Length: 252
Image (tube, rainbow, N blue to C red; front, side, top):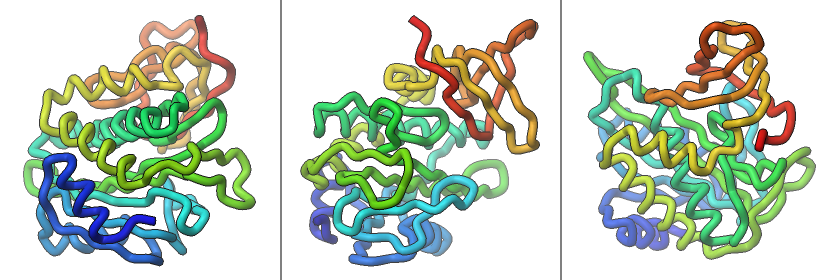
């Protein structure tokens, strides 16, 4: 299991130095990190836990873990980006963690837009980005991520990457995330495309306003929005925020 020292070592291995916070049991690492961010903690502040009692996914869905058998952390980021780019933060985290998890496990871990980590059809992890703005820009983004090392009980569709060295997985994820956050934002889209489980699939997207688009996921634009080519459509439908369902296997 991780601990406070392991979090600090993982940051150092990624070339970073920032405060860390470890809880054996917590309600939510994102809730803790959001409170720290609001109090002005520095970028890359890292929060981790061995078990969450009120873990959350997007739209306040519950995240369930097997205690001591999941990597669960949240990191505070303060990107000096235009507000419309905020969606790229979750894609950067997804690409970074998918790459690190594939390296650690030998499995092909991929990203389902916008925030799931998959091995085949099984969800092995998820990402939750929560942002706060300030006048003219982004104040902070808290990115929470969970990766199952063992399959949790009674969670339909859940999978796991197997028992790997959690500290090495965290360090590898942070190292990749740092490189993406400090580089050209356009590179985030390219890295995410390389590990996408969504592009090329027939999907159904439900937008936050309740609209539904069904077609082929053809691209992700420079802000991280998904573009869906619909039958008879003159231009792809752009989905910036919403939920998607994979309807069939990828096109070849």
